[in-house]
Length: 85
Image (cartoon, rainbow, N blue to C red; front, side, top):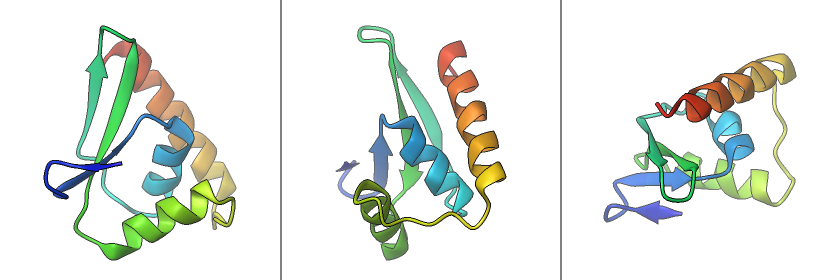
């Protein structure tokens, strides 16, 4: 989901966030919402490739070049989200 007048792209889906990090997109912030217990992963929306990569992931067309890095990134993001930062 794009927001902030398309300056940022955010998602609450940890697998998608891990995929984007693995593909080289910078994570700007993790915004924790204590009301619903969910974390939003925020990326700069400064590359058209980000939306393509996110769409491919959601359509199950994404291919990770490094599966072990994808798993490491997923675990790292889960850990940070659970800690609230």
